Length: 591
Image 1 (spheres, rainbow, N blue to C red):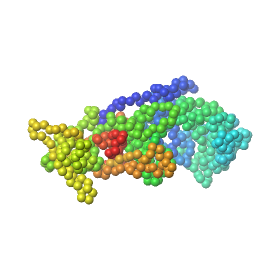
Image 2: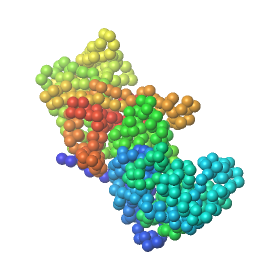
Image 3: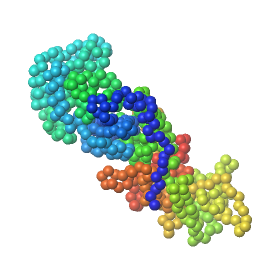
Image 4: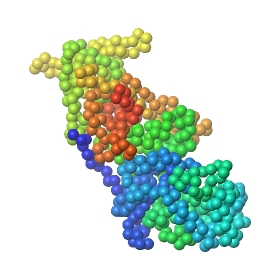
């Protein structure tokens, strides 16, 4: 029986029906420039792994196109080969698919290198670009020195067009080393917008001393176009109707439109939205590399990070990420969200979409002395409050394991779980147990065993219902109970909400207990069925792109009274490894 497909109660299109994105759609009459439908693009640079903040741009671009019956491209902005690697291309494609989106086509800026070069020569011939030989410091001084001083024209700005064309071809042919020559756009130095102060269009990246090889075009090119030259033209080539980007590119809109007009190509409409930032963590590539190199995390997919591959490994369902972004809405304001708010959304999403099992983190055995050695009673447990999830049975025997924190050596009025002389219910077991004694380790003083009595009344008699019930797992080898596991509990990676604000740097505030490990944890036997029926939730077809197999982290469940968990990819048949996704409550200290 497959897991139930649940209709998660959320309007996934609310962000497109009103507010910023509805206004953007109404601005442009569809049909303009012979385009009869919405076309968008998500254009990441393939020089790093996507993080939680990128999920907003993904949802906006793919979701906007889908909502209006259009298309969205996944276009890799691969114009800087020095930092681009195959693993980034692969991971970005996987994350877009994982979030549930399928691009109409996967493209690359490098697909257009020949056409872009032709337009660069055309721009020179239109007196819209020139080759500059100034140093970086000289260019900064020409642009006012970064202090709003008067701007000066580059001494090469008015060189003959034929001369700039010859010099540009010399750049192409390897005559110049990096920073010895740059093709700059001839814009408007009187404009108050720095994006019109003769931006670079092409630069030399390859040289004999430091050869650069492009991932896709090899060593064909020694010069590469800049983002400011490439982005608007590739948008034009692909017929993008709505170029949706973050507000850091708002000033670039004027240069975007200037270049399209100057070379007389179709001009898409650029509009900007506020980016998504999250507090309590770091997202930059440089800082994450530092965390890895200093042994603070294992790798880019360490579940304590907020890269998308890390969130996937931690077991966060992609649907919960989309819900999170959708609930935030879209405006032009930059949004900084507390990580706890994100986890609250994940917790609420899991509440209705994953099954429930009993899991004990730190077990101690309870021997029920008035049951026989061979006693076994099968107890029926539902997988959820929703009957559609089904039921399963687990054994109840003479020896059961409970959480160490569910037993105290001395009874007290404010403790309603198990203690000598007090009774407690075992979830779904017909009658309670009463602790009659315990044993401790003489060296550590820790309780090693609890003795108890099963309070099954005589026939016809009644029993007093216990004040509380605790979870448990039976010792029953014939039913493969318990299932032994190692459980990793992930806490916040930093001790402060703004790691960058610390005077000694973000590494100084790394939480020393950001990961806790429980090597002797136990899971009840229903886990086998949960694993077989994954993915949870079933409305997400999370499968590995390469193999087509269901990924381990889709084996998700609520450990009753403990937390939400998923299966980690480190697991083997002999060694189950579980990751905590989120706690059951925001302020939960246990687990």
